[in-house]
Length: 195
Image: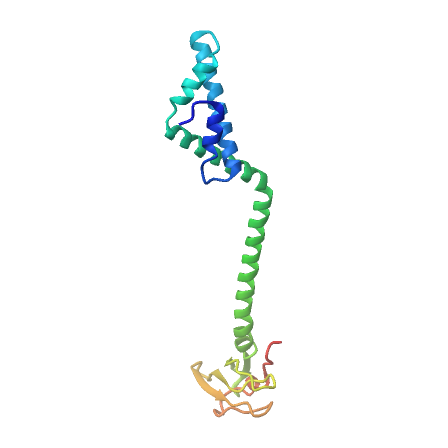
């Protein structure tokens, strides 16, 4: 165990911690020593001599030096956080912005893929009695190599409003459905593969 200020400095440098932590540990020791000297002056009315200080150092337990090292680490951590506070906040905001952009892109990608199929496939027709009959094309995004769809399916509401599935095999721009009640307008809404 150390018995003087110089021996304390050598003792704290024996750790595996970085040198700056050793220096801060010694600074915590110097602060504790100063506080002890003030306490002794208040009790006895006189400043302790070097022999009294060395006796105080010799009576220190390992746990006291471990506490000093822990305090040094805390001081360094707090100082580093204060010094880097602006950079850390900027980095946090940058990560947050990136996450938001990624979420928006992911969400918009979903709506692009599904919106083309549902939105472009929506049409309406009027039956011979003048009733509105909506049709919705649900198209698979399977390109044929030229940007067109290979296959699509459609829901057609009949005159009584009952949905009916029909399939459309696109072999031409104005292709008719297998089901003659299906609106031909669905077939004219070709979907180009998004660029």
